[in-house]
Image 1 (cartoon, rainbow, N blue to C red):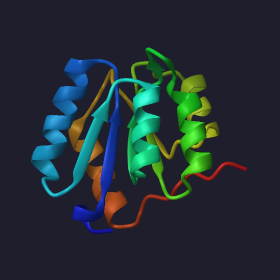
Image 2 (cartoon, helix red, strand yellow):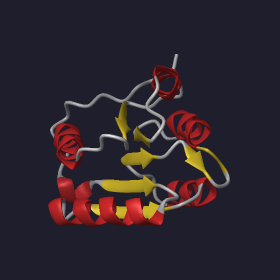
Image 3 (cartoon, rainbow, N blue to C red):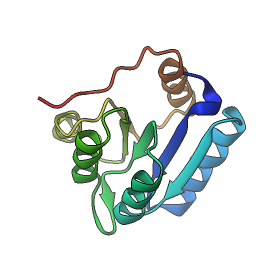
Length: 134
């Protein structure tokens, strides 16, 4: 996939974290269209208006659970890849994330921007497969 064709959505309620990640992503992937929101309802509005190819999703959001939104997105938007970004780095959260259709899980506790960049580069080169629900 060509970088300029990618629409990325960052769903994160922590404005400082969201701002830092968004800034770094825009610096590294300057031709990619990157949107950011802090709630489930805003994320769904963007998805309904303009389907996003790659979504980075927090688990705990002010108006709902990111896992529920992940399941909705993966069921409704068949080409979208969802990646979880969460401070809750426990096996049960990872398992629940994948069961809801997430393709990858990054912990905010040991967040590595380079790992995220590597994942996005793999996504662009077609190495990332969408996690399809049963």
